[in-house]
Image (cartoon, rainbow over all chains, first blue to last red; front, side):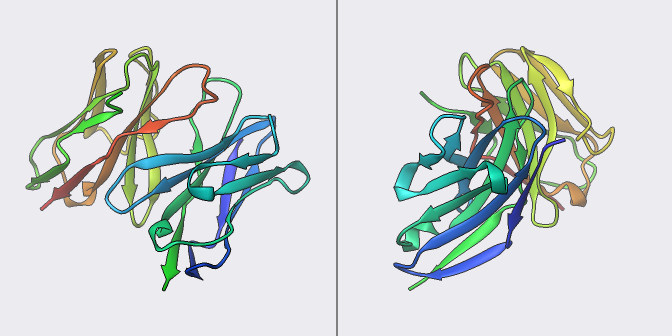
Length: 113
Length: 114
């Protein structure tokens, strides 16, 4: 069975500081991995996805994530936080086949001026 | 592309009333998902369809909830009778086959049951 663990339900960073949101997955087969962002009062939007190509994946708004099979991790990073990055971030896993994504519980990112 | 469309965006109703939430998926997408999001329970998958057929409804909380997809461009989620604990944001998402299961979400319907 697949599962996703997001470490830290709330992360707070200063504007301009590094953003690091952690995600570990459990999957019996090679996974597809996703990061979604949810801004207040909006639906989820795809930030980036890993689909077994390059292990370092670049997404929108300078976010990137690195797939590390040995660590079963897919952490999300951004070099310099902006106030507009304040949102809820969800990691999700799937595998080949027509099954729904399994979402983590989300991490709320706060950015302090 | 208009994206996934949900209506209404906000719904306020009284306990015991019937509530119907609507969703129009992205044209050409084969899969449709209904989610519920609350502070306490996070994002929960309620049911999903493939080619208009319900595949897994194990997430539907109880018999008061029902979902239909009469055609490829329309789905409904109905709650009858509604209860205050049903208050949540309900999301619809769609996905095309072969897209590594990437899902495209609608803006959600915020339901408040008084």
